[in-house]
Length: 201
Image (cartoon, rainbow, N blue to C red; front, top):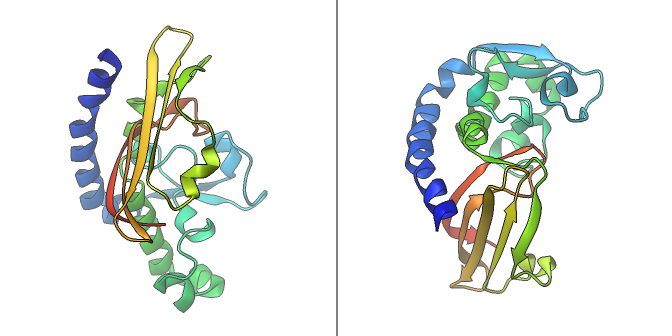
């Protein structure tokens, strides 16, 4: 019960911060510096030798810690969407407004992720102590299901995550993901608070 209560108070705080992030993203997206990706995130660079955009240190807590703020464009996100089908790399390199706009979209997509990491679960020495998952590939099976994991870290703190899909058509479901993103790369596991009533399979 205590791990759930410890997570529960973080949800309204992060919801408020997410709304603030959506509001201020057009402004803070103007303040960027360029650096080698690995020097900021600590992870291998997706494009070694290519400087990537990051918010200036003053605003960096508003972006995800594991990716540059230009990740919406360079990552494999929405390849069939409007922006990537109507504009190409030459447009992106030439048009500062397009670079700015894709930064705004990334900041809104991953709203207040830096705060989500600060409030996240410390993954130092994390080891799993419980799960009802027999086959994780079932998550993409197109069938209604739920999955649960629990863990403990070196400090003896309990962590957990719960995710579920309930299909109401053959291709649409209600999806929830609560607790912490225990399988993410950063040591601080982001707070998970996803609820999508129209998730496509």
